[in-house]
Amino acid sequence: MADRYTCILLFGAPGTGKGTQGKLLGEIDGFIHLATGDIFRSLDKESELGRKFLHYSSRGELVPDDLTIELWHDHVAGMVKSGIYSPSHDILLLDGMPRSVPQAKMLQDLIQPLAIVHLVAPDLNDMVQRMKLRAEKEGRHDDADENVIRNRFDVYERETAPVLQQYDTKLILDIDAIGTIEEVFDRVCNIVKPLQDR
Ligand code: AMP
Image (cartoon, rainbow, N blue to C red):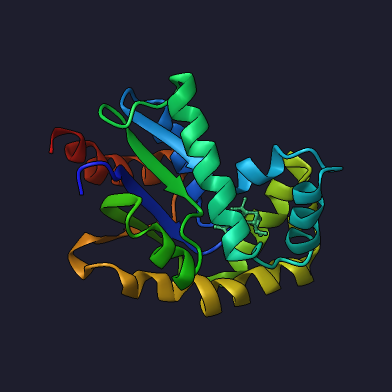
């Protein structure tokens, strides 16, 4: 299908640096970083959807699939309409989407993944520490509590990791997520930049 959104999926367990790497990559012309968590966090907290988001995120749970896809799709359509994103020119860097197998299925006719950048970190405790630091720095309620963080890892293993099986293995590019932001960014760039010349 010609009109699917061309994208690169940023994939990996919580705390592996998808957001950090996505933001840096998003500064390169032709790449647009789109984090589903950021879309949720930008909602009015008093709105019905905003309250639902807080209900799930404060427990480390995923927001229900239908709601998430609808919100995401509306958001992308809004970006196109306002000219922030040009599907014929830009590659979307999807951070935190899809996060479940049903979401991957719902997106099948909407996105065309060029690659899945899979940030891999073997030590869960390192990731927990990273997330606690981030919670302090960014004031994120969902990552301040260690039990919630641990639940986010369980949810990742149970609901998100199986998403990889939905895609051709040739698309999945494992990248070592351990190192400085710059070191990991170099690794990511080496893989991702050539995709712009497809
Ligand atoms: P993140 O900023 O990616 O860590 O996401 C923060 C929270 O937003 C998650 O814990 C979920 O509650 C919610 N969220 C983000 N992306 C999704 C998604 N694709 N599906 C369902 N919930 C999501």
